[in-house]
Length: 168
Image (cartoon, rainbow, N blue to C red; front, side, top):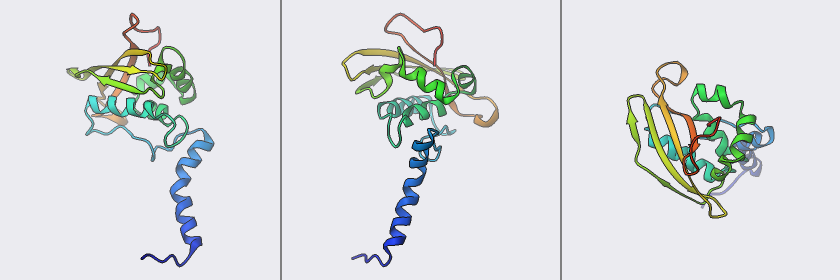
């Protein structure tokens, strides 16, 4: 049986383990150590699965963590068009993307790759039962900080007739 000799040390250890998510939640800025980040070992379908799963559990481990994860996997060009994170968050919570946040079910198509570009469709079921199919376009980054990593260039609903003027 484990005996705790110092309750103060236990309290400090627990507070350290909770500090990053708590600080992220209070500051409104994500702590990149607690959300998934792009890596060279991730295939396009891995990236889409990470993003979609994060959006389904948007407020774990802190409020809007799913949206912060989605932004982390946005390509540099995508971030230029949709960022900063605060603006991106408002966009994702608005139509037509709001369905993605805290959705209750998802169904993934096969990935189609064409060189350094990949596409995948995802049907998402919202909490109210609405179903929307979104197209994800990803590209393998050819240089810079994210060289060799698959990242999202755009997302748009396809079940209602096509891309909005500004895709994610």
